[in-house]
Image (cartoon, rainbow, N blue to C red; front, side, top):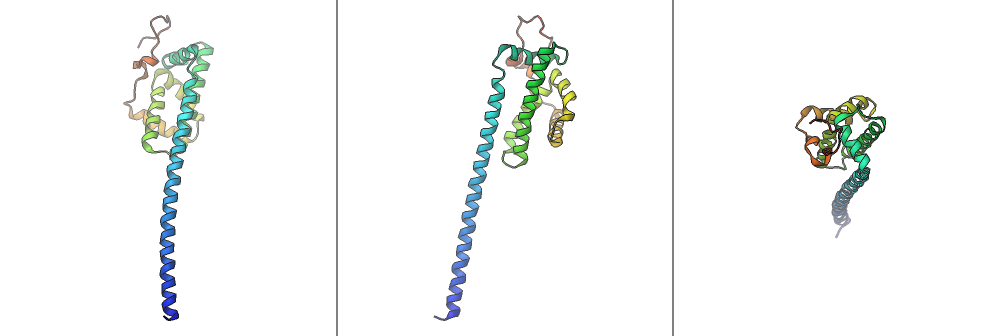
Length: 176
């Protein structure tokens, strides 16, 4: 066997090693992407659960629900609770938006949270709050995405969901 033959064999073995390395790298990238997406979903679920726990107190739930109907025409304490809870929801959605922009969150999950957040803003109180606060939120692309979703319509009317309806015992219950 000549040196040229040995050189050709070496190049062939080297080429195979490069192909195997590329396949291995591709698999590693795929696994890493899957792990990032799983972590993103877990972060979102944790954030949403933390937000949901804020509603456990009956007074907080009532103030928020009342705000969906009447913000800003409500007592200071309730207006403050509503504004802060909806602000917390907005910050939560900002993280959902950022994960989608980073490519670690599937569009289907992003769309579900966009619809849910926008449904809160589509209520009379949510619309008034959004008009007051949208100009200070960042990133602008997130605000534009929410505005576009609101403009498309067809969102869930939270006032028709029993969870967001004030009961008949509340004398301040707004007309739907």
